[in-house]
Length: 343
Ligand SMILES: [Zn+2]
Image (cartoon, rainbow, N blue to C red; front, side, top):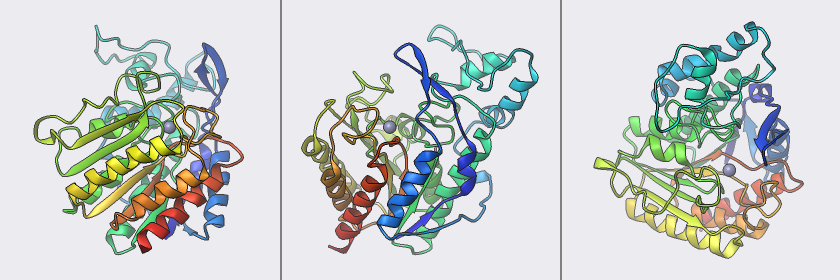
């Protein structure tokens, strides 16, 4: 296996998020990268920088006005008097109104789904580098690499065509999957992050050339709350090509792995050319979000089940927040995946 990583991803340093009704430190920090790189070293996976790919592949999955907001919003914000170091809206279009206004704060509310996706000075550069990293890893997989890991940060799976959310700006997983599909590949995405891959689901909801599967904590009690239920199965030509497998919160490895196995069965039936694993490590009992109890052996087994699908595979890093075991869990997943692939 090969890993791709771009140093520009260190540039995004969000300060805060709102949790428990309070401003709290934002856990989606560059330090995650250091822990994940240590995990790659433990797993003896070599790391290379990505080559730069045309922006078209990113633009294909996102709205032009939204991309302009991400690119220019922070600078415009700082040019206004009395603004702070993070661009975060304090007003969002509710279900009763949905126009896109000209005002910057109004646009921020339109393009930001929640309080956890602030724009800071390095956000655009890091998000763009993160998407390019996933894309480069996918290019290598289609060129014959059996498996590649994209160390992507900020993560991507909560990002919609025109909306950031849950620490995500550009949907790295969807951008890579869509590019493979544009090359005539049949693609399956399996998202094992503890939070539902709502952005990825939405981006492929009406398509049958990309199967989307998500295993996650029950959204009745967990972010993103408004999507991720088992009855969301796709629409139009995409009907039957979206599978949600919510798991009760605080479940251990066994319940989570049973859902992953169900996801793997759906992938086998779909028979893709390429598998994309949206790898969140936040179902761990050690994760600061502490909403699931999957242990290190569980992550190894999860990797093994997905590796045993024996497909050309891109692994894209999604969530998983600073804890003493973050790197160890990545190494466990990769060693399980490699063992599964060799089976
Ligand atoms: Zn997550």
